[in-house]
Amino acid sequence: MRGVITLCAHPDALPFASRKEGPPGFQVELAQALARRLGVSLDVVWVMSRVQFRAAECDIVLDTIVNREAQAETRMRVSKPYHRSGVALALPTGAPGTNTFNDLDKNKRIGVQKGSLAQMILSQRGHQTTPFDYEGEMVEALAEGSIDAAAVSPASVGYFNFRHPKQAFRIVHAYDQEPELSWTVAVGMRGADALLGEKIDAAIEQMLTDGTIRDIYAHYGIEHRPPAITR
Image (cartoon, rainbow, N blue to C red; front, side, top):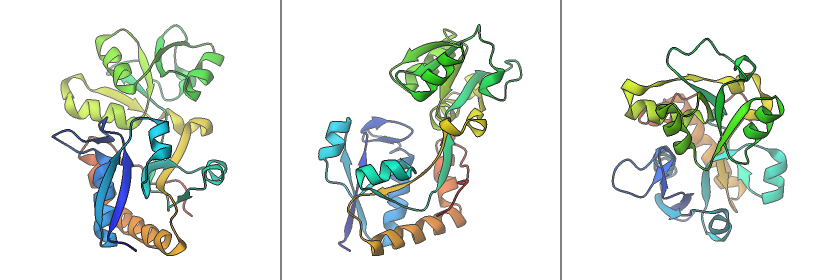
């Protein structure tokens, strides 16, 4: 294996990744920890769109959703999963008890990401959805009170709570009861041979066991949820 591994990441998408001065994002920190265990250095290729991503030359992509059909189509190998996530609910503190999407009052306005599966599912169930381009905008709208709840990634709302503890929202892991909105994530590998895949799997296993992944997520106010499945 050559002495460097290259990560594709977005340059302005905290808590995921950032090239600006300040925290680099948990994807970059995870890739740095992975590179150390592999005994190589890390380079980052900054990509902002799917077109740029397809053209970029990078070895790994963090937070690749484990899906056999998608991996077969893209010919991307995936590592051992390292985190369980999905579409959660962010609610104001003190909001009536809600544990699932089905508990939501259909008169309440729910922020969703435009064109997402969550938007389609909630709209089909008769909920009032308000679409947003970006999760950060959705969380800000919830803080301002222009929506009543947000169907959002736990990472985005966890990071908001970390930065705004006096405005913290309640996070409901509603995806636990919604298989279509729940997934595990892994390291996506482009052009990796079997040996590199085995080394990355071993490094992920070490990082899960010694708490490295948990601690990196905690730097951004995110709860690490161990993967529900293993390969």
